Length: 372
Image 1 (cartoon, rainbow, N blue to C red):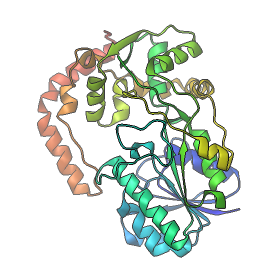
Image 2 (image 1 turned 90 degrees about the vertical axis):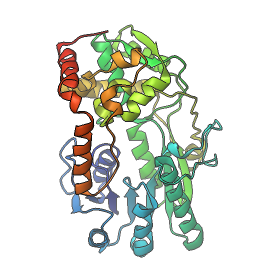
Image 3 (image 1 turned 120 degrees about the vertical axis):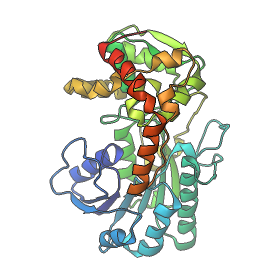
Image 4 (image 1 turned 180 degrees about the vertical axis):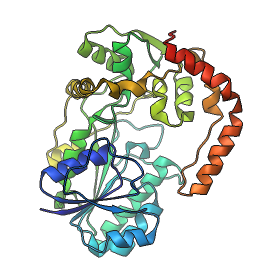
C-alpha cells in the first residue's frame, strides 16, 4: 500500500484516478478547494485536505505528512508547482505531473513525440505547462528528484465525453452535426488508459525523469469520427460542413464551454501523436476508439439525463459564418480573487444587457426544438 496525494481533480481524470488507486488498496488523500461536487460519491476511506495550492498555509497542512506519490492534476503554472517542490521535496517520493499536448509548437512537426519542439510562451496554457515541464526535468537532473510527466491527448470517457457526447446526442435526436470543411486528423484516449499509465509509472525507476505522450492508436478525421459513432448507434449522420475558423471562434468565446457543446472545435490541422515510448518503456497498450465509444454510449444509456447539456445549440450562427454576439461580448480571466470575479460578472452583465431581449428569445426557440 502506498500513501498517495492527488492535487486537484475531482470531476474527471482525477476522479477516475482516485477510484482506481482506492480499488488497489492505496491510501489516497485528495487536496483541492472542494468547490465542485464529484460526479459520484467518493469511495469510503478517501482522505480530504481542503485547501488552495496558492496558499502556503494550506500546502503546509497537506505536506505535514510524507507521500510515496503525488499526482499533480491541477498544476498549470510555475507558481503552482515550484513552491511545492522547493519546500516539500523531502516529503515526496515521486512527483507525477499531468501536462498536455498543447505544449507543442505550431506548426506541428508531425508525428509529435517527447522530443518535438514546444512553445515556451509564458501566460499561455501550453507555454505555462511547458515551463513547468522544463522546471521539473531540471529538478530531476540537478537533484535526482523523481518526476514523471504525461502529455495526454484527446482524453474522453465517463463524466466528460466531450465531442462523443455531442455526436451521440445529435445522432439519436436526428440533428445535423457540424464539422469543418477540412478537418485534420487526431487521436482519442480512454480516460481508463490514462489512469493505467499513471498507475504503471508509480515509483517506477524506468519512468523517472521521463516525459510520455499518451494517446490512442487511430488517427481519425472529424468526418470519420462521426461516421463511426453513427455506425455504433445504427444511424446515418446528417453532416453539415462549416468554416473551421468560425466554429473555433464560437468555441473560444463560449463560457462555460461545456454548455455550448455544438461548437466544440474539431482538429483544424493534423495533430499526430506518437505513443511508441510509453508502449516500449512501460508496456502500455491502448483501447481502440470503437470500444471507447461503445463504453461511453453504455454510460449515457445508464442515465439519459447525462446527455442533457448537449441540447444547447448555436448552429444558426455558425452556418451563417458569424460569431455568436453574446459569446463574443463576454470575457473571463482565471483568478482566485472573489472580488475580481464579482467585478467581471458585473461588467459582463453590462456588456450583454441586450440579452434580456435577445438571448431569452433565442433560448425559447431552442427549447421549443427549432432546427435548421
